[in-house]
Amino acid sequence: MSSQLISLVNTDRIIGKHVFGNLYDIDPKILNDKDFLHNLVLEAVKIANMKLVEIKSWNFGGKKGGVSVIALVEESHIALHTWTEYNYATLDVYTCGENSNPQAAFEYIVSQLKPKRYQMFYADRSSE
Image (cartoon, rainbow, N blue to C red):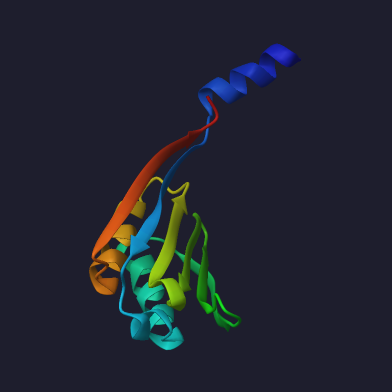
């Protein structure tokens, strides 16, 4: 029985594409505009050829306040978190979809937020 399980893992492994990063020196007015950020992530879902399940956005307060936007997609998610005090955002785009393009979503969001600099990382998320 365990050899069958190993065989299934080897032939039917799930491969995910994970693009994530840090965005620095962004206009704080943009970082605190919940509606703009919500629509930005919504458009990124389309650009990446993902299928939206639900999207939520909210402001969070305190000294390190900002906005969070989470798009749940059939293939996985897009998460954007901003901190206006630091002119900073983190972006996470993960998909298991064979036809979706997380890098396109990441690059689109970066192009609209216009950070002075950013870091982008890629991880192959697979079962092997």
